[in-house]
Length: 107
Length: 120
Image (tube, rainbow over all chains, first blue to last red; front, top):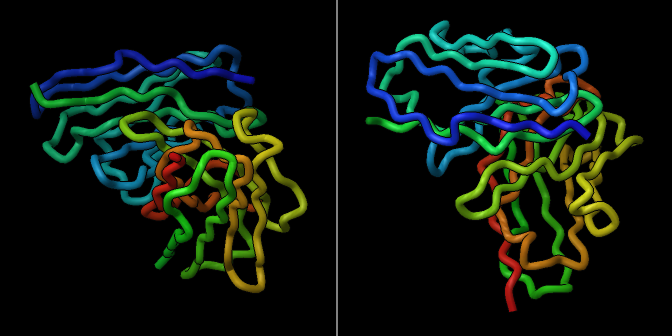
């Protein structure tokens, strides 16, 4: 079973700043089956990125994903007020599970 | 428009049973894998189980294997989660989520969740 770790636990930034979130897998993620979700308080999660770097429908291009093997990154190029939320990575191949999340909060 | 409406949550005693339902609309239900994901109060997301589009294959997290059963009725566009021998640590909001394909656990749409509280 692949275990996902995310860092940092909390990222305190200001609107307009760049956010870099990390997701590290305990084993290589097969076929790039790595996704990112955003969750705001009181809401269900929303799919942002799949296949490491493909944006889901309607996701703005300030969100980008990268990485391979065991190390993956979600980058938000310029934080908008609506981007302050919790972000989860997910492996959706032979192993299924989420990372513990990174909270992006306003400084 | 894809809609997923969970129901059946509530208060249950430890060791008891509960069945959750998820009514789906806005897409061809029988073409997509479905999953349940839960979130304990103030905690992160935990994948619980999944069923492929045909219903012939199911997958479970170790934490619920042998206690929970996922099933689907493609004629009724409904997903189910039968929860038996529930424990206090099963307390969570349970989300129903639609896969992006017939066998995947990549989750493109989520319901709003139903709260299950396990307490005596």
